[in-house]
Image (cartoon, rainbow, N blue to C red; front, side):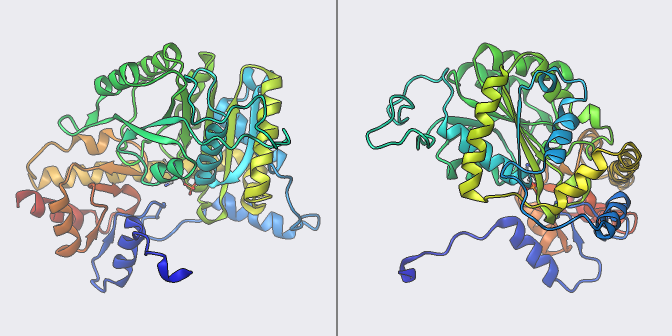
Amino acid sequence: YFASVPAAPADALFGLMAKYKADTFDKKVDLGVGAYRDNTGKPWVLPVVSKVDSLIVADPTANHEYLPITGLPDFTKSAAKLILGPDSPAIKENRVASCQTISGTGANHLGSLFLSRFPSSAAPPKSVFLSRSPPSPGATGDTPPRAAGGRIWISNPTWANHKQIFENVGLTVKQYPYWDPKTLGLDLKGMLNALENETRPGDIVLLHACAHNPTGVDPAREEWEKIAAVCKSKKLFPFFDSAYQGFASGDLERDAWAVQYFVSQGLELLICQSFAKNFGLYGQRAGCLHFITQTAKASENVKSQLAFLQRSEISNPPIYGARIVARVLNNPELFNEWKENLLEMANRIKSMRDALKSELIKLDTPGNWDHITNQIGMFSFTGLSPQQVDRLVNEFHVYLTKNGRISMAGLNTHNVAYVAKAFDAVVRG
Ligand code: PMP
């Protein structure tokens, strides 16, 4: 049986991490890592998380029982408020269907699984979709249709995992232009043109809520308005991936602006929410999926289908990370402490952007490096070529992904000058 199973391709990022670990050079630098590091290069447990940890350990009523299928209500409700805003009409009108997930990855999976099972009614009828009514012969009517179909548009480039998550549930993945290598910024014209002219009604459009991974380039507010207008006129379904709220700018409201704007425009959409980066809870897998519907009844039905799908996939989501997040979000004092911790991370990253750019300017490195400080969030898309990246890894022990993406969190006051010198050397050739 197993002799015929071929080896799967290695995950590029995790391969890079293994190579970094095995490197014995004392000045090696890890710019591949997608996790926050403090100024000494160490993982950082947020002080507010440590505090809540001890509260939970000391709480005699806390146990390790199963959560409900759709998760911890204190967590999912406060998570919805965090991304939609405390006064969101969608919340007040019960038009939000929330389900706790295995962090952001699980939200991307469950959200796309749902959409592949329930294609938009705006989509042209396709023979590949099994009809929802009447039920096929033998169907009991109490299971979701096993249709595999629908199209999702993802940015070029995007987070490396999006394509395989969506293909895994049977969606057809298409790409819209996003990064302009000439301006090292957003290709808004190309993006709008593809959404306007190449999509079909009912297509899904993946959008990064803030701090686009891997480019660090976000649309400006007036650009988001244009994107929302196309989604509305072309009947496209926005699929927001929010992995960096608060971590990106240090301002929770600002990082949620695009999502809240789309909701205010009356669009139905979904949001994948991760608490990996903004709480430093990477391994705890605390995440949430929210569907915004037009009616309370639709929301109830969607939630029941999410529970149905979740039951056969993971049965119940993990409790510990969700409990930490819920305690922080539901306590004003802890919430304020969390905001301070967020600011500390965001400010350190911003100061590393400034430091890297000024070191490059000091060295008179050929090229314009403004994009390093214009970009936002964990990553910067440097514009370095695959050949330059190879030299950085192999000659200078500076580890970054082939596409030239660097994690700003891997920089600190001890290594930024060394990294700038290495960049300078490979750029000069
Ligand atoms: N979406 C994006 C855009 C991301 O960058 C990440 C993390 N790298 C995720 C989703 C998922 O992260 P997690 O599953 O750890 O929450």
